[in-house]
Length: 106
Image (cartoon, rainbow, N blue to C red):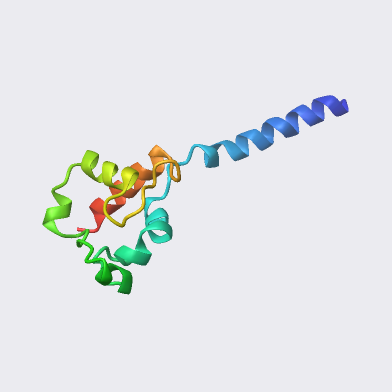
């Protein structure tokens, strides 16, 4: 076999191995833990020092859970009050994964 052929085969193999990771859905739980839990708490209750100081709503509450996905996406994307905006910091897929994760907190 020629070196060029071996190089092509190795390149294709690397692409095939890396491709699933590139197209994997974002992990909403991991994103929540990294971006949200410091204020909203690991369970979404907002009982962290920052959450208490800012009087955050309990993400598990019926009031929050009844919001539409579009509403939660808007708050996450644009921010609200002292909550920072994540548009431009997280992809649309990341924000959708966060919204889906928030739904599991109820």
